[in-house]
Length: 143
Image 1 (cartoon, rainbow, N blue to C red):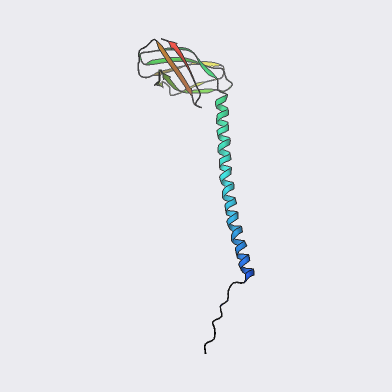
Image 2: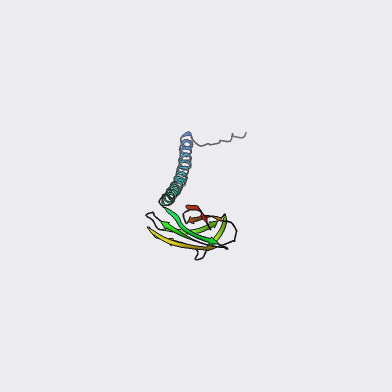
């Protein structure tokens, strides 16, 4: 006669301990992942806020211009509290390359920005200058 096979399972106490341990490990991993994710989002938001604040404090305008024949010169006055860097110039929608790459203008100063690009004809020139933080000023001038 064969004796019945005895199977031993995990006791209820051990099963509960294992289950609680697994839930604690998965919960801790989810918490740590979410904390690092949200701290990255917060730092990106803070960086964006700093860039926007810098852009809001830039104040400049074009006070004089000369353009024609594919060349343009504009006098830009910085009346803000921060130094600004002019990195782009457009005349009637055409990109003009700034001769020296970019022009740094100190607070309460006027500097000439020279550029060259595609020549166009017309009595009026819509001139736009763009700062390194994306602000721009534009005006229409007689040639």
